[in-house]
Length: 185
Image (cartoon, rainbow, N blue to C red; front, side):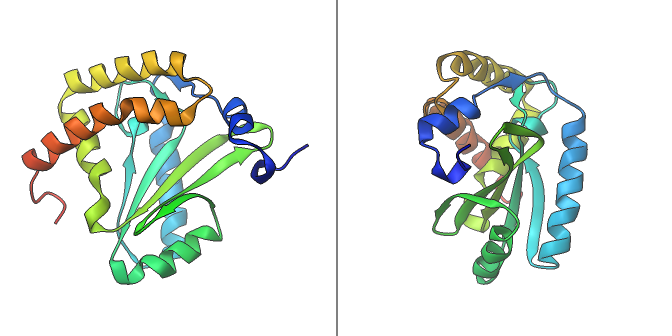
């Protein structure tokens, strides 16, 4: 059996399809458990550790993946990145923005799957989008509808699924950043 790192993108997409499920109360528990683990390995390096993504929004369908945002000061980014890399698998890295995962196996998804988003202050847009969806249920419902439609089209194409949601996410994130100016300062 191939290792994950030896698989093509198409093989990975087949093994880890886009699959949405109704909201699960245990996602909140999974977040709390992983947050405690993250605190134990990062000590006092974090500004905040937040549950983000659709699993943080009550009553909407989501991928069974708990997204966690870790905000750190710029001067702690490199050290935090190195620490996270020893516990999680690096998915992508850009300047002061990295994403890791946990729970992807050669047999498919584990019971608990996480995406860990390491960010600095300039890159915490996910918090604004999350808050906007929580406080605007009609927008959350529209987002859910969009995701359900896209999941059918892009079941085996994670990039296509993500790219097709981008306009919606950016639009409402910009509204939220204006509405919630200063919320995360």
